[in-house]
Amino acid sequence: MEDSCTAQNTTDSRADSEESVSAVDRLRQFRCFGVATVEAIAFWTAVLLPVPIVLSLARGVGTRAEFAAVLALLAANIGAFHLGHGYGHSRI
Image 1 (tube, rainbow, N blue to C red):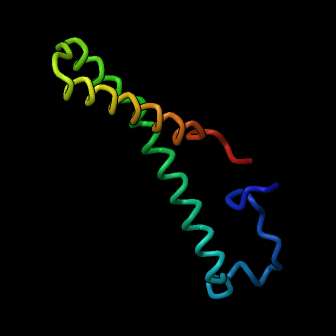
Image 2: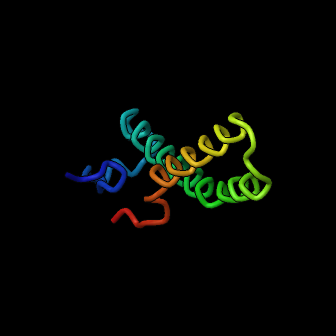
Protein backbone atom coordinates (compact mmCIF):
# COMPACT_ATOMS: atom_id res chain seq x y z
CA MET A 1 0.00 0.00 0.00
CA GLU A 2 1.39 3.35 -1.02
CA ASP A 3 1.66 6.18 1.47
CA SER A 4 -0.38 9.17 0.34
CA CYS A 5 2.43 11.50 1.41
CA THR A 6 4.83 9.86 -1.05
CA ALA A 7 2.45 9.17 -3.89
CA GLN A 8 3.54 10.73 -7.14
CA ASN A 9 1.17 13.08 -8.87
CA THR A 10 -0.11 11.20 -11.92
CA THR A 11 -2.18 13.97 -13.43
CA ASP A 12 -1.29 15.59 -16.73
CA SER A 13 0.81 18.73 -17.19
CA ARG A 14 -2.19 20.99 -16.61
CA ALA A 15 -2.07 20.00 -12.91
CA ASP A 16 1.10 22.03 -12.50
CA SER A 17 -0.80 25.28 -12.19
CA GLU A 18 -1.99 26.38 -8.77
CA GLU A 19 -5.59 26.72 -9.95
CA SER A 20 -5.87 23.08 -10.97
CA VAL A 21 -4.86 21.73 -7.57
CA SER A 22 -8.00 20.33 -6.02
CA ALA A 23 -9.10 20.83 -2.45
CA VAL A 24 -8.42 17.15 -1.78
CA ASP A 25 -4.81 17.55 -2.91
CA ARG A 26 -4.42 20.56 -0.66
CA LEU A 27 -5.86 18.61 2.25
CA ARG A 28 -3.42 15.74 1.56
CA GLN A 29 -0.50 18.18 1.51
CA PHE A 30 -1.67 19.71 4.79
CA ARG A 31 -2.04 16.22 6.31
CA CYS A 32 1.48 15.26 5.23
CA PHE A 33 2.83 18.48 6.70
CA GLY A 34 0.95 17.76 9.93
CA VAL A 35 2.29 14.21 10.17
CA ALA A 36 5.86 15.41 9.65
CA THR A 37 5.41 18.12 12.26
CA VAL A 38 3.98 15.73 14.86
CA GLU A 39 6.82 13.26 14.22
CA ALA A 40 9.44 15.99 14.61
CA ILE A 41 7.94 17.31 17.84
CA ALA A 42 7.54 13.81 19.25
CA PHE A 43 11.11 12.87 18.34
CA TRP A 44 12.66 15.88 20.02
CA THR A 45 10.36 15.46 23.02
CA ALA A 46 11.59 11.88 23.36
CA VAL A 47 15.17 13.12 23.17
CA LEU A 48 14.70 15.80 25.83
CA LEU A 49 12.34 14.08 28.28
CA PRO A 50 15.04 11.97 29.95
CA VAL A 51 16.56 15.15 31.41
CA PRO A 52 13.70 15.90 33.84
CA ILE A 53 13.29 12.18 34.52
CA VAL A 54 16.91 11.80 35.58
CA LEU A 55 16.79 15.04 37.58
CA SER A 56 13.66 13.86 39.40
CA LEU A 57 15.22 10.52 40.19
CA ALA A 58 18.47 12.17 41.35
CA ARG A 59 16.51 14.47 43.64
CA GLY A 60 14.66 11.52 45.07
CA VAL A 61 11.13 10.25 44.87
CA GLY A 62 9.68 10.52 48.35
CA THR A 63 5.95 10.83 47.89
CA ARG A 64 3.32 9.12 45.82
CA ALA A 65 2.78 12.31 43.85
CA GLU A 66 6.46 12.49 42.91
CA PHE A 67 6.42 8.80 41.97
CA ALA A 68 3.31 9.35 39.84
CA ALA A 69 5.01 12.32 38.15
CA VAL A 70 8.06 10.21 37.27
CA LEU A 71 5.81 7.45 35.92
CA ALA A 72 3.87 10.01 33.87
CA LEU A 73 7.13 11.36 32.42
CA LEU A 74 8.24 7.83 31.56
CA ALA A 75 4.91 7.09 29.88
CA ALA A 76 5.13 10.35 27.94
CA ASN A 77 8.66 9.44 26.87
CA ILE A 78 7.54 6.04 25.60
CA GLY A 79 4.65 7.64 23.73
CA ALA A 80 6.94 10.24 22.21
CA PHE A 81 9.34 7.53 21.06
CA HIS A 82 6.46 5.69 19.44
CA LEU A 83 5.10 8.77 17.64
CA GLY A 84 8.50 10.09 16.61
CA HIS A 85 10.17 6.89 15.48
CA GLY A 86 9.72 7.77 11.79
CA TYR A 87 11.25 11.24 12.01
CA GLY A 88 14.14 11.75 9.63
CA HIS A 89 13.42 8.66 7.54
CA SER A 90 13.01 9.36 3.87
CA ARG A 91 9.54 8.53 2.62
CA ILE A 92 10.56 7.20 -0.75
